Length: 377
Ligand SMILES: [Zn+2]
Image (cartoon, rainbow, N blue to C red; front, top):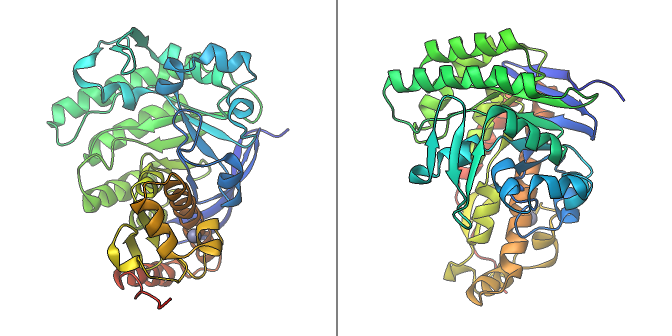
C-alpha cells in the first residue's frame, strides 16, 4: 500500500484534476462527498451511493460518538464495515456540531463540554479525544478539532477563535496516529479576513498535514465573499496537497470552488433537498410537489442514469411525495447525489480538456433556463 497522496492529472487556470490515493482506494478529484452523518447517507443504501460514482463519503464524530459510540463501532470492525462502505471515509471532527449546540455547550481553552441533543447527557471533546474517536471509527481522513464562530463576527472574535483552532490543530496532529494510506487534514480558519486566513495557513503549514481544508465559510457571508476569500487563501496552500472546502454547497458554489482550485466538497444540500421533493437538474431546481408535474410522463432528467430517472416519471415522483410515501425521498435523494456526481465528472473532464470556463458558463446558462415544460402523458 502506498502512502496517502494526491496526484495531479491536469489543470485549467486555478482548477485542478487529480487522483487521491488512500488506504481504502483511489478517488478522482474534484469530488463531492455525500454526507453520511450517523453512518448512513440518509434514505440511500450504500449500493445506491456507489452506483452514482461517489468515491468517498463523510461520517461525523459528534453523532457517532453519542450513538452508537466510537468504541462500539471499533469493536464491530470500524465504520467501513459497520456501514458497508469499504471506500475512503472522511470524518468531521465534531467541532462544527458542538459549536452549533449554542446554550448546550461550554467552550474553554482545552476543549468543549456539551450536552447530548439526544438525552441531555454530558460529554467532552478535545483535540485529543476527537482525534482518538476518529481513529476508533477508522477514518481514512481525520479532521483537526477546531472552533468555528458564526459570521458576521468582530475581527477580534474571529482572530481569537482562529488562534485557538491553530493551537488545537497542533494538539490534533500530536494525537494523530500515522498509518500508511491514512491522512489528517488541517482546517484553515479566519472568517473573511485575508490577513487572518494567511496567518492560519502559515500556522498549519508549519505543523504540516497530508491535506488542507478551508472551514468557516458558507456560514452566512454570501457567495461573493466566499469566492473572494478562496481567491486569497487557496494560492497560499501547498500545490501538491488536496484542498477541501467544508460544507459547500449548491451546484453553482461547487463550480466556483473548483474554478478557484478546490478538490473536495461535502454538503447536506442534495440529500436534504431530496427528502423535501426538491431535485437538482441541469435546468435548475424542480419542486416535485408542484401540481404541474401531476400528469407529466417525462423522466425527471432525460440524460440521468439514476433509478428515479430511468424507471419513473415526474408524475410518479409527484404522486409519491403527495402520498407521503418514503420511496419519494429515497428516489429523489438518489437522483440528487447522481446529479452532483455527474456535475463533478463533467468539471473534471473539462479541466483535463482545458475548457472549464466554457463548460461552467454552459452549466450556469442551463440552471437559469428553468425547469423543462411538462410532457404530455
Ligand atoms: Zn436522475
